[in-house]
Length: 270
Image 1 (cartoon, rainbow, N blue to C red):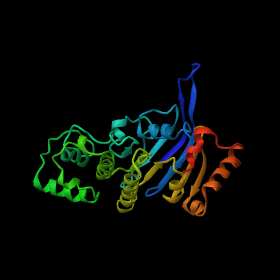
Image 2 (cartoon, helix red, strand yellow):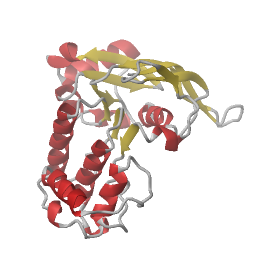
Image 3 (cartoon, rainbow, N blue to C red):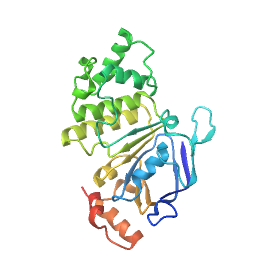
Image 4 (cartoon, one colour):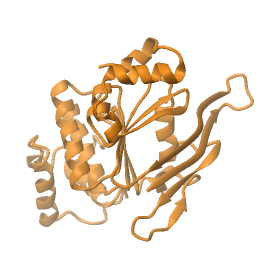
């Protein structure tokens, strides 16, 4: 579905601040996969997302997208971020980033319905509102009765669940989750995670999920990646990770890197 070839990202090249953030990444993501990604702060996880989504143009390498309907491949390496937003959805850790807080709930949903185009030329009608209420009822938060309320009045958990629903409504070819439950309290984090799993299954989504919760990385998804120093150092299938423990993952890190996890890398353990 998406293929990354020899991808590297260098910041401030040719200066004393030069930093290699991604190093020769090669990765193929198949349609319907749910990939969890772990690694310490600075491992390159978010930079990888920024390159896939078009926030950064890589220093070298390619990103190839396969159109499932036509079977044709497209090189999207240099496509602008707004173009990729039509087929790549992204949800951030901050629950306020995925919705427009100064707009009514129904207008947020209208934007999602129109795949991100911020034009409200299509007028809302009773049929649309009924459809919105039906979709919102899935969240189990009572938002189906608040279509006219500004989203800025909602809690962080409500907004993150809404962001997830809106992203799914736009039917992305690839969904990037960047620690999307980390800023929520345990109850809302579990609710949003359960919704994520439900939507991924019902809509046959292709998902990549960054998490600092190693238990979640082992429990959820069909594949696990570990990043370190801008590289993918471990790639486990669902079968390989099924019977692994957190201690097994840490030992694999030691075997590969010939060192122990240090400092913020211990955030991998939850």
